[in-house]
Length: 186
Image: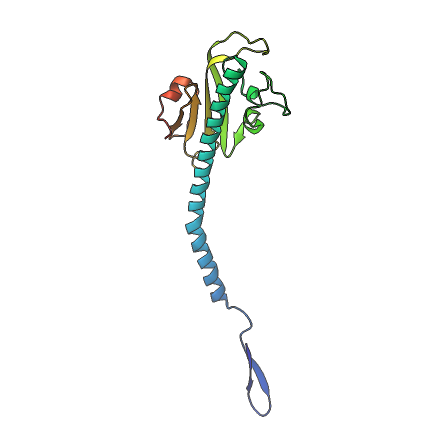
């Protein structure tokens, strides 16, 4: 607001403020920085929790898809991770089951800050007539954070019993026995 002040015989001078002072701006910036310092760690924790929940749900989907594959094509569990996916369309086959999103089953097998891996083990089953490769009796699927402490803290795994297990250190689990030795996710 400007005011006019008379300073002598008929001379007028304008006084008043025309903006914020440097101190006022510094105070506002300091308040914004304090609020950001409080909010950012909570935001990162929430993002890590969301990534972990997404990884566990994706493992549940892959485990269910493995059982569906086994019962549909009578070829054991899928021989490769890519077998779960496929080109899309109306017809699924033993080699391209179209049971899981291609983002998970095609390289680089990453989603929501996690790296997914599917490893088969044990003996193979007899090849079903409509399949080009034999399936397996055992498998383990794992989800490992891309950066422990930033995209997630825990890694997850599942195998043929269908129970999801977790490792609090974020390490990758490579065998069904190692997966089953970990605590189960409640």
